[in-house]
Length: 467
Image (tube, rainbow, N blue to C red):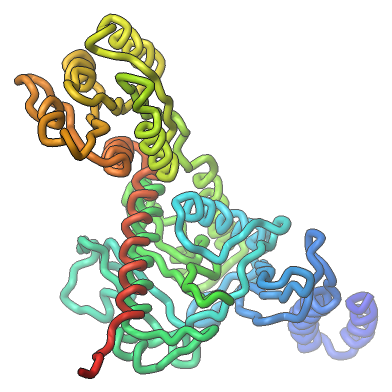
């Protein structure tokens, strides 16, 4: 209605003022569109049945709303807006909000499935999602696999495409007015950031650097299954209301460089928009189609659950030991099945069971549990090409005698031997993770969690005790 009234007023004045008024009208329409978007956002009371509270923060491409009926949570609403150069270049891009929200959900589905600590909770309609309420740390954490873009300008002499192994990490303070200056670890620590009671010191910087690298490596492996090279990306962290550092904000096509087949000329990320010296509607269509392509590639990118760890025990008396192995496997996302068979008492049946699984699956690992004289592992190893892991249920009183039947194998056999149920599960996961990036990711997250646990424990106990 406002535009209609304005249009009538405009038409009457155009007859008198001519071309200059046409220019004024064009500018005014843009202003009105912005006003209408603002009015709509002001008038919104709910999204997808979530009652909206006040706007906690508004960025160039998103709004963050409090959820008064959902303590500890907030809602992030994406905009149909694309920007570059600290917002100097900006355009409306119809449909971008839905594409961004979908891409973000797909990325965090990967990371949450892997076990990463993130703020992402679930989608809330086509343009929004629910997240843990965080206080954001104003640092962009950048990881690079190949040298390109701004890195080349800041590091003259490094050729484009130089491969960083391990990936190169950089940090930038979020400050549009000063073009997000690069910061060192020392600058971050010296800033003495304190969010939700957590002082950001060296330990927290170390944790975020490790986490940033792992996020990159997980997504790099995911994209490699689509023959796409993840060149670099940026992420942000927040501190939730429990004082935990979590991966937060949005990860979409604004966040990374992505080159199909590793070819820069085929880039499908926001760099296409950044490179435009002038922007036409056709250019924006290309940018949008790239973003849609990225989102489609992320569909069904999590590997199929088509593996199996078969845990074979020589006697039902070993069931408790086998259940422990199974529990550790499940914690790593591994499917398991338990069977009872004896290579000494029923060798034909043992081999029949092996053939049963070989005939229906390709991603198999056999774990054998047999005490005293372990014939089960060596017999299976000599009759299958699939990995066999011995995990004998040893007892302290005869461990040194019984373990030799698992270790001292005839020539031509290649089964491994571990002594603890967790070790058997980890060994199986390492084998299956070679062809399944999600299993690999769960292993890496477990290693990250071990690092974080040690860091936190050391922080609690360190300090000089005076004599």
